[in-house]
Amino acid sequence: MKYEAALFDLDGTLVDSVYDLYIAMNLTLSALAFPIVSQRLVESWVGNGIDVLVKRGLSGDMQISEHLDSALADKAIALFYGHYEQQVGEYSVLYQHVETGLAALRGMPKALITNKARRFTEKLLDKLALTSHFDVIVCGDDMAKKPSPEPLLFACQQLNVQASQAIMIGDSKSDILAAQAARIDVVALTYGYNQGESLSDYNPQYLCGTFLDILPVLNQR
Image 1 (cartoon, rainbow, N blue to C red):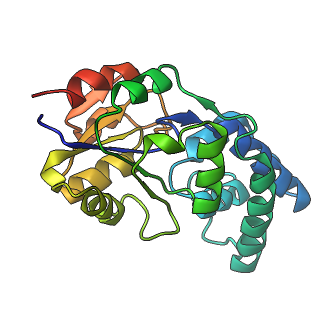
Image 2: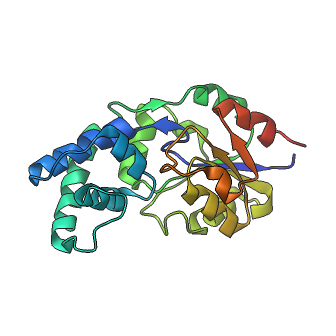
């Protein structure tokens, strides 16, 4: 096989979790007397971890305000964590064909690499019955977040494969940049949370429109 292991992103790749984040965001903003935001905006802000997401919510923009008070941001992040703990997995759903695709890859070693904190990741995976598919789970509070290559290289070590033998599957610029920095091939999925960017601009090895499209790529010999 050309690829001996697969590394998967979570939100926007396997799971559509934006509604949980949207609810938690607006509960947080309302508690602080900030204007609520649309689901579409929240979806465009996802991909760089919860702290960044909350700061974007407070700023009302993708670009975090340089005038944002750090004490207010810390308070908002703590509030968000509390609300999200209650919401996580409540409205999240698997993208089409994810279950079928992961079952078809049962024989291949797999890691999950997410910028989401472990306490939320494990809860979400359990609710959606995904945990058993992965040999290794690397979360955003374990080490540096993507686009750092560190979590990808760590996952390869844990799976006992060379970086050149692995492939990353994700839906965002962060996934592509992390894979490129780790010298790992990458599949970019076009249906997820791409922050309004054209993923082809970042030159992934493969662009796929559905989850099942990854199977011929991963099964190359």
